[in-house]
Every structure is written in C-alpha cells, then in structure tokens.
Length: 379
Image 1: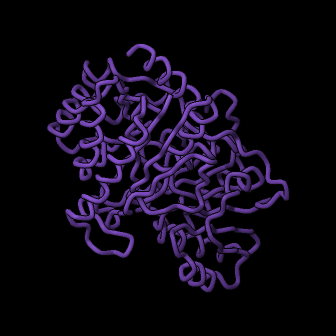
Image 2: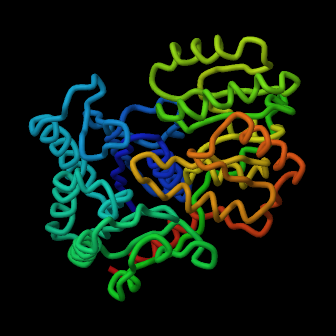
Image 3: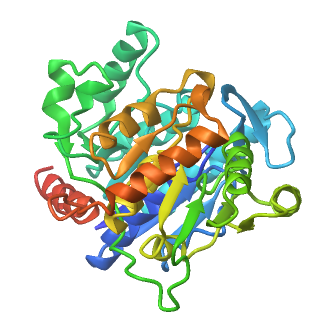
C-alpha cells in the first residue's frame, strides 16, 4: 500500500510532527509512505527515513492566517502557489498512491483550498480507486460561521471516504469543538491519540530537577519566555532550562539569556531530546498544543499551561482546561500571566506530583494504519 500525506504547518510545527508520526507507523507496518510538507522546513523533526517532499515554503503572518508569506517574508502570489500545486500533482502522479491523507483540510487550511482541491480532484479522477482521508487532531478551531461547517461537509461528502480523528471519543469527541452532522458522523473514525513511542528517561539524566520552558518548534512564545525569565529571577534557587524554536533563534537566545542574569536559567535551541528531558524535569511550562500535551502526559511531568490564544484561538484553551482537571496540571491564561502567578502555578503542580498515564492510549498511529488498511480493502 502506497500512502501520500499532504500537510502544511503555518505557525508551529505540530501538524508536521503528527503527520510524520503517522508516516513512520505506516512505514513500520511495511507500507510505502510519502509526506509532502508545505510549511517552513523543520530540521529538528526527524523523518526516520520517511520520504519528504518540501514544497516552496510558506507561513502565516503571525496569527493572521489570511495572509501568507514566503520564507523570506515576501507576500505569496499566484505564481508561487502555482509552483506548489505543480509539485503536489507531480508527486501524486509519480507515486500513484492507494491512499491520500490531507492533514487538517478541509476543517482548516481553507486559504490553501486550491492546492488541496487539485490533489483531491486528481485522486477521484483516477480509474483505480484511491482512498481519501482527512486527518484531524482532538480539538479543532470552531467555525466562525455555520456556512463554513456546511462547506466543509460538502467537501467531505464529495471527496472523502473517511475522517481520522486522533482522539478518544470518551474523553474528547469531535463535536466538542466542531458541529458534527449526521453525514459527517458516519465518516468519523476515532484512532486514539497519535504519539510516538514513549521517549523514556534521558541516558545522561539531563533536565533533572529543572523547570523546562518551551513553546513548540515554531517562532512564537515571546511573552511566555519573558515572563518565565522574570519568574526565574524571583526565585534564584530554582533551575530553569528554556528551549527556543524557530529557524534562526540565536538573537532571541542571546536576548533572553542576558535578561536572565542573576538566575539559574539556561537558554538554548529547541532540542531533539526534549521528550527525554521531561522524564527528569521538576516541572514544565509550555503552551498546550496537541503534541506537547501528549509528550507531557506520556512523561507524567507536572505542567503549567499558558494556552496560545492570539487571534481568538481557542483550541489550546479547551485542551488545557480539560487536562487541568488533574492536579498535576495547571492553567495560567495569557491575560493572567505574571511572574508571580507563573511561579505559584509551578510550585502548585510540583506539590501535586507526577501524572500517571496508565489509563490513556497513545497508539493512535498504529490504529490509523489498521483503520486505513481495512478501508482500502473495502474499496
């Protein structure tokens, strides 16, 4: 079975990370898999040998997802988008996949509907049946208008054979964040949470007794980082490690390290062994993206979440509030973020201790492979 996954991350790198986790599961099961990535390159994410085609890259203008920029911060034009569409179709025709998976679309990335639609049209026009699936996380950005949900339903009904929901319906069903019509309900397949295998403890026990501060692999998190620096200065006895993402974070690292003079805070690049550090950490301070939340659940790290809510985003807030039902997790909304509040929250989750995740299932990637294989056989 040949699988093609199309994904474009516009702000952070969580969408690409999840797509690669799925791709590795297909590969481990003996299937051919190719990922087409349309966001900025993310060298800190390891492909594990999965074939990855990088499109002419683009990103959003911060949280303004209606404005697209190239890697050099110039506005994206029709010619640039045309180059991307050509690469997508060339890869599709060369690969002749049995399965096409679009990550998030059509529930999001509507600004890129032309290139996604070109792939969907090609898949459905082929004489040999091609299974078409959408892949979505546990919580979606709710549609601002009912018409958007209706349009999404129309696209799903016309082009898609199913929707893979990477969640557990007993804890987070899709209808908590998205209106699920009867048509859509019939196409949903819950896979459980998609996470790589547990990283396990760091061989050198790096991160021991540290407060790990992170904001994913993208270039967001300035307010969180600056507040954490000030919190570290309030209590110089605590050890902190701050991980900065983005393509060229050196200037930001130097700026924050200078601010931290007098504290026990170390500032460095986002690192590939981040997940292993969490097993030894005293606590974590982070946003609450899908992948980060699963990393913390697996490691059991006491965690303080500052959900990303710029531009009216609600996804991370909904997820963080759900997790904060357990005392090992706390939420500090961005409007309430002060060094004092952050430090108090860190101390609170440390007292609560580590989270025990034995009742949660993280095998969503393997379950995705199983569901997809069964659907292909039914074509």
